[in-house]
Each structure stands twice: as structure tokens, then as C-alpha cells.
Length: 474
Ligand code: 5AD
Ligand code: SF4
Image 1 (tube, rainbow, N blue to C red):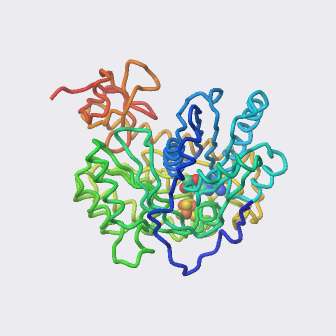
Image 2 (cartoon, rainbow, N blue to C red; image 1 turned 30 degrees about the vertical axis):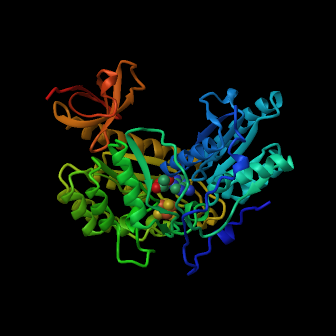
Image 3 (spheres, helix red, strand yellow; image 1 turned 90 degrees about the horizontal axis):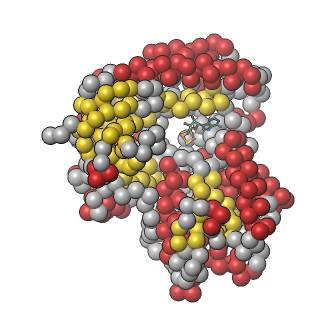
């Protein structure tokens, strides 16, 4: 049993990051382990987790498991979890309750938990105490070891827990089964060294480690060959890409090189305002295939709170960057993340957050109530603000955010925009859905044959969260 240790997970040493090109191996005797068996993977959290699940699915298929969308049908159930806030945590334990009933009627089901929650000591203790009927638990650093973890659990007939609390390496040869045929996630870096005081990510995902550019470019070229239209370059803080490499090559270089592959659309998430360089802005401006969309988390509009959060910028420097982006990149859309109710956030602090939302008029924002994460510095900060007050602030903030989301969308009315049609719309089975270059959700009446195409759409109606439009024939 390898248990997590948050103290060790916090370590940042000078230890060299290893690029491992053959660590994923699938032994002959495991290639048919899943024959005639089905798997069901449920994913919580961010795009990084979505992409990890794409790796997990491919590994399971290498072992001959077949996918099912119906958990009741599955022989293997894996929950790929998120640790960022308490409610994600609660949802997972709620779901495990359901799975327990299923396992009681069908004891042969293999049940596993992986992802960020597996890296937390409190979670593993709870699993060992109350959920000891689980079969496998593994963390974010050893997804590639899934075959051997599964093998051990099955042959020992007891729960196999393998969680590594290490700074981490880069494993390059993990297979992937992508959810979409048109847009793809591409990891460019793993982990984070920013240690914002509220955030668990630097503990659950290790130190910042960039992939070598040649591996990233190869992956994108291969996607182009396979007909993919869009890539999203993924990392906790993509602007810091390359800083840990011993070569003089950063995010702006990567953006320029990825643009040269000819892929039609390039996006990147997430940006920390600290590392956003002028060269990056130039790269976005100069390459038509880099989308004018930037997710730029601000977290708070109060300098006091930003300092307590350890965010390394002020309201003023954020605004300076924001204004530069708006000025330099035509038609850019900027979204953000905001936390309310950080320990001891005063009414004045909160008003400053509303104030910056009024100034920036974000295209949209993800808003959260501060959630205490065991092991992070903010978890030990005294907090006198009541939950009732925090809920009130969240409500007020959302009203304002929604107002500007709608206002921004209204500018699109009667305009023609390019939309990559991805699939059937959730709201109407006769419509297709897709996103504009600026990441606006659009629903369009269209034949299914247009799925996977980038089409010109005239916007006919706008709402807060989406727009409707009709295809313009060229
Ligand atoms: N509580 C609330 N929100 C959080 N986030 C990260 N950690 C926490 C936390 N402890 C939010 C931040 C981040 C987004 C991904 O999640 O806004 O940008
Ligand atoms: Fe968390 Fe801050 Fe790193 Fe983002 S930059 S993952 S909020 S520590």
C-alpha cells in the first residue's frame, strides 16, 4: 500500500524531471484481462481530468475492456475525482454510496477511485475506514501503472492503494482515446508551483513540469493528419510553459510553433496573469489560428485579499494586462474565475470585486465560494464571515456577471461568426451546437452532416449563456 502524504507532496527540490518515453507497458498476460467485460469511467473536475480519463479509457481498452455509458452494465467502474472544492468531494462520496448497492448485487464488479482526491490524506483515511470494499485507488502520478495495479488487486483479492506524493515526471507514451473527433486536449505541462494559499492543486499534481516542445508539436501534427480542427493546450498555468526546461523556449514560442502545424483552431487554458508576456500577445495577434479567447482568473478585486491568496499581482496590474489584451487583440473575449468569501473577506473587499467586474465586464466568469482545503495555508486562516453572508455575496456577484455576459452576447446579434459544429445540441435534438472563435456557445439548425465542420453562422438570438443562429451558405 502506498499512501499519500501532503507534506511530501509540497516538496520542490532541484531534482531533474525525467522524460519517460517507455514507462507505459502492457504485459502480454494483461492484454486480455478485460475480455467480454465493460468499463464505465465517471469524470469530475477540470479539463486536465477529462484528458486523464481519455488516457485511462485507452489503457483499459488496451486490456480488452469495452466502454459502456450505463454504470449498471459495467464490470469495472472508475471515478476520476477532483479535489478543488468540498462539493466535488461530497459528490464523489455520494456516488460511491450508489456503487456500493450495485456491488452488493454484483460482487464481481471492480470499483476504483483515482485523480486528485486520491492524493489527499483525509480522503484515503475515509476510504480505508468506511469504503474498504473499493478494489483500487491510484493517484495522478501513476495512471500509466493502472494495468499492474489492477493485476495486483485481482490476484491479492484485496484493495490496492498506490498513491505517489512525488514532484512528478513526464510520461510520454500513455495511449489516448479521445472523446471527440474534432477537438482535442493536448497537455503542455503538468503540476503547478504557484501555491496560491487556497489551492490544493500544487499538492495533488506535483511540481510544474513542461513537456518538451517536440513531443507537443508531434502530437498536434498527428491530430491535423487525423482531421482534427481544434486543439486546446492544457496546463494549470500555461503561461509559465517552458520556464522549467533548460532551453530558452517559452509559451510564445510554443504558440508560434503550434500555429505552424496548420491546425485550424488553437486555444489554451489556464492563464495566470503573472506570466502573461508581450510576446504571447504578439503570437496571438499574428496567428489567425490562435483563437481570440483568454481565460484569465482574477479571483478577487481586493488587493488585501489578493495578497492573502498569494496571487502575486494587484488589481492595478491585472487591469493593465486586461486593457492591453483588449487593445492589442481585436474582438478578444476574456473570461475569469472569482472566489468570494475568502477568509475574512470584508464587505469592502467584496465591493472591490464587484467594482472590477463592473470595470472589466467579463464575457463570463466562473464564480465560487471559498472552500477550505485541508493542508493548504488558507485552511488555517481565521474566518469570521458566515456562510449565509458568503451565499449572499455569490448571488450578488452572479447577478452582475450574468448581466455582462448577456450584454457582451448582444453585440453578436445579426453578426456572422465562424462556429465549429461539434454535435447535437442539448436543448433541441434538431439543432447542432458549437463554439465561436471567442468561445461562445451557439445552437444552429443544421443537418448532422455538418458535424465537424467550421461554418459561417448568422446570430439570430442571444441569451446569457448561449446564442442561436442560422447557417449562411457561401
Ligand atoms: N475554494 C474555492 N474555489 C477554488 N478554486 C481553487 N481552489 C479553490 C478553493 N479552495 C477556484 C479558483 C480557480 C478555479 C479552477 O477554482 O477560482 O481558478
Ligand atoms: Fe491553484 Fe494558483 Fe496553481 Fe491555479 S495558479 S492551480 S489557483 S495554485
